[in-house]
Image 1 (cartoon, rainbow, N blue to C red):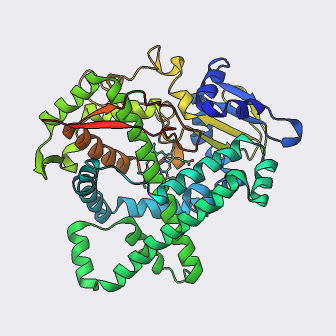
Image 2 (cartoon, rainbow, N blue to C red):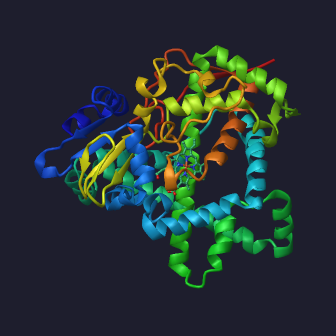
Image 3 (cartoon, rainbow, N blue to C red):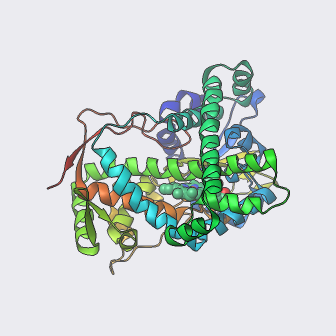
Length: 437
Ligand code: HEM
């Protein structure tokens, strides 16, 4: 564990090196008084065992929810019955036709009316985004130092824990504003007009949740508000940070591989109908579904730079992992998604190269890689619920940006991962955009 502290600036690369030299699983031991021993693995057999075969023996556990207390009782921070109910509810809302219609419309509208005009101007810092970044950095600190230390910091309100308190305030203000604005809008618009709008334009997730939660009689006052607050925050973090971190690495990889950029643009030209909008080209969401090369390039980027680089599980009953390691109740197992994408014995000798072609069959179809090998979206009963949403949004942004602009990284800009819950770039990605002719 002291080595984790020492290597914290490049934690994921250090984990990868450790795992390369240890058949894919290693026991990290902490000083005896801290009770911080944990298994670290990137072995697909172990990951399948933990996430799928023996799912019920490996919950997230109370330690996880204590570290991620900012997420409240939302889906990411829950286990057993509470998680199951939230998952069913989220699945129902996300698969309903009105939400799908809303997603297709907003993915195009956001790119056309917000992103494209914004790219022509410098961007200001967004307080909510900054607060989430600060919170995620503070949570990683809770992994790097023993529990007693970060809890002492929390009690004294110093260091990263102080930053976390401030971040929570900003996050709560923002979420509360989102909920109030939506409630006002729902009160203001007569029901017949609202139903007509929803039939035409679709229905967003927050409205869907508000409608269904109000139908539950026990959901009143504070309980109703807390449930909406936790759900909204969990969904925002699930959808915002993952896709934005993924796209940043994707654009960087594309700038370093001009042949990939050319192939993406060729595919867009031949397979998509496009419309001229305010001087720039926009694509229909339905057209983007069938893009094999762009999809492959996004998967390849997610393999090398998964937005959630590492995850953890607790242990309920004694068990033996497929690697032969014995685990006991109360222990922690961490699985490095980042390291899994960088193992020669999993992905071949060229595993460090960015090659979208590895995702395409000789029949020019997308190659299926089992979720225990390509684990960026998790596997088993807790598989990501937003995978399709993520691809819809990432394709909309990637296609519009690459088709309209040539992206060039500013000379001398340093690119390295940040030590945080999400795999953001430490210094962001500074680019120059040149409008294509
Ligand atoms: C590139 C984009 C994305 C990646 C790589 C990704 C990855 C993941 C991973 C690894 C998990 C498991 C986390 C854990 O249990 O510890 C997860 C869960 C989840 N994701 Fe995503 N995600 C992405 C985008 C989205 C989007 C856009 C949404 C939609 C709002 C979403 C909704 C969820 C939800 C609700 C869960 C919780 C599932 C459960 O616990 O049963 N994700 N995702």
